[in-house]
Length: 128
Image (cartoon, helix red, strand yellow):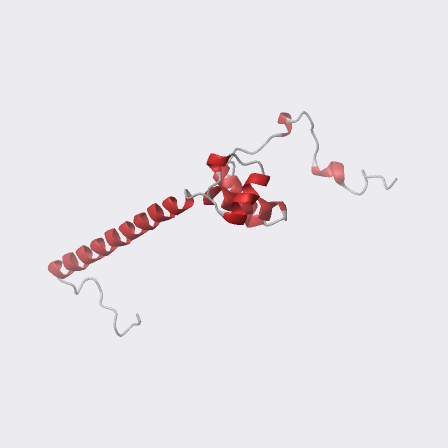
């Protein structure tokens, strides 16, 4: 655990020691990237497997074409269900997947109406 007693200022390290530490860090970083890449490849392979049993039946009832009844589609259907139930994180993830999360904001002109916050003040709203 790092604290003041075991920290070694970088000025005290020799050039060769700094080079060794940098090489060690670079190798560890490369190994971590390879592990992440391998994990993504395995997950991609698993995601493309056909859904079986109750999952396949659910996708069939939902009208998903037979060639698209994969574990990935099943997960996306579950994500959609969570979003429909009001899960904000699920909704945000769906928007991110669709590429709409960072979409430009919608302007009033897009819908042909115009209003201001003042239009909704208590003085302007009737209680009829």
